[in-house]
Every structure is written in C-alpha cells, then in structure tokens.
Image (cartoon, rainbow, N blue to C red):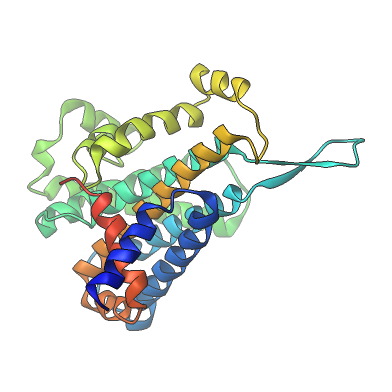
Length: 294
C-alpha cells in the first residue's frame, strides 16, 4: 500500500462520522474482531488460571456491540389499534448497552490487559470469581436438583477461593471495607468503575463524561428522563441521529482498542489479524490510536 492510499483511508475514516458510513464500517470491524477472537478457539493456547474468560469477555463485547449496531439502524414500533408503524431510535437502550461495553473492556483491562505481576492478576481474578459465585448463591430456593448440585459445588469453591485469596501476598493490601464486602457479598473489583476508567489506557477525556451520561440512563436518573422527554424518538430526528453516531463511533473505538490489545499480547491473534485486508487494518489502527491516552 502506498503512502497516498494510506492517507486516503485515514481521511475517509476521519470523515465517516455519519450513519451512512459508520454502519457498514462498524459491521466490518465487528466481523474482523470475531475473526481474530476465533483464533483463541482454533489454537487452544495454554492459558493460565482464569485466562479462558478473556475469550468470553471479548465475545460479550462483540455481541453487545452487535446489538447497538442493530439498534442504530432504527427499529419499528407498533401501537395497539394503529396500522402504521413508527421507525424510532431507542437512544436510551443504545446508551445503556454502550455503558455495558465500556465496563466489559475495563474488566478485560483489570484482569488481563495490564502489566501486573501474574500473581496479582490471579488475585484479582479470584476475587472476581468469588463475587460471581456468591451472587448466584442468593438466587433463591429451587427444586432443580441439577442447579442445587451446582450451587453446592460453587459454595465449596467459594470457601477454597477465599483461602487462596488469604494466602496471597496482596491480601494485606485490602482495606477494612474491602474485607467486609468480600465476606458479605464478594469483591468483584478493587476499584470503582470511575477509578478504573481514569487509570485505563482508554482516552479518559473522551470516555469519562460519556460514561457518566450513559450511567444516568442505566439508573434512570432524572437527567435521563428530562432528555428523553425533551427529545424526539424518530429515526430521522437530527438529535437522535447525532447521538447515535456518537455511540456507534464509541463502539468502533472500543472494538479497535480491544482488538489491538489482544493482537499485541498473543502471537496466535497477531497471525490471524495479519490475514485481514491491509486497508481494514489501517482503519482499525487509526481508531485504536484515537481511543487511547497519549
């Protein structure tokens, strides 16, 4: 590829902040990401403790991103007794799903995409795992024998994991409130989402305010209700289109950063990535750089 061709790709990417250009580009990026993720299944690498969930979290990101992609095209909404259907953009759901994607990325970074000592990664992973098992213990009573057996096995695993955590050299670093949370309902993360975002490789100035906005919608805070009440739902409304472009572009950025993190850390993923068309790789690497802190 010549320098002129590369420059033209970058110009096209910079000018792609509209639904007509974005929708097919996001579609392609999600396909590339799925193609590279597949290399984990194909090569069956010798992962360490917990690393198998790297694949699961990446798939979760991709599935949720695909849902945002579909919503961005507009959906038909029917009213009882009316023959006509309205085409709307469900901005609220797009925001909530985009927030979930940011959190999935931050979890990937918290557990795997970091430069911590392996023992500290395992410590974080064990805490994360304990919290998940403890949450399922609270699901309530059931007569399903298969599920009851699973609950009992996980109850035993919780106790074993807690013993492993207490033996870790990182256990003394837990604060008093951390110990209380761990004992009561688990400690999935040692930091809040906001703190994780501020320490992330992600472009903090870009994502911090957006994450707060998306969180308002997830929790139905009054500001989100005001904005929904003031806005129109039509898929042709300019404000709806503009906010959808912003969210869809964030999906593109997050997908590219996650993909490049995977590629840079695992040789099998890099080999798969290099099979992708060069023009597509230039676009992915452009948005990867945009999405990171300088």
